Length: 236
Image (cartoon, rainbow, N blue to C red; front, side, top):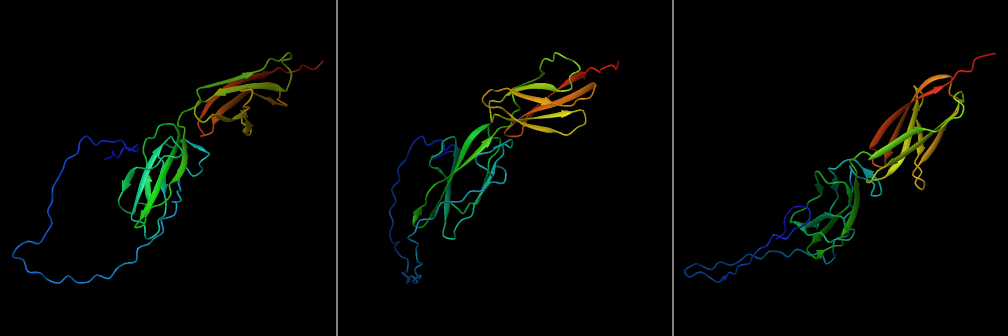
């Protein structure tokens, strides 16, 4: 006996015994039993289930949704399925659904990388197990440092910025920079150096507001901003 907790925890504590005698009851009339035509039984095991997910469609991607949903189709001869989800890529499902279940939803799954396991059965037996990977990251990056590098000339119109962020879940994917009301500039994060340098050219003289975001692979982000001043050059 296994608990329906998503992990198949064993809750069997003891076993009992029973003795049953099957036979004709005295005094009952015997009536002929009608012949039931035999139904051909498939000797082929069901094929592997093809699992799909609207919430987590790509196994290699990270998603900020922690209520994943899964669905699949079954051949007509399938009578039951077994399911399980855990962090191991080749586990055997152990939670039995003795009917034609074709979808399953999970709720409030903690952040991490998981596998959803499914297996179908027909009258010939159990088919192969399908393992479907899904990844969850609901947390923002832990830190984000956004700084202007040192300028020797305050009238220089090319300004360089240093961006550095950390994310223990899915990792930092990219940064976004926006100067005043201009267009958003997307900058891929440097993985090796853990620090990304970006230069904004042709800033006009005056004060500017630069907004930056550090975005992880699940779309979570932290925002920071800087006030940048470019000195005006007085004419002779």
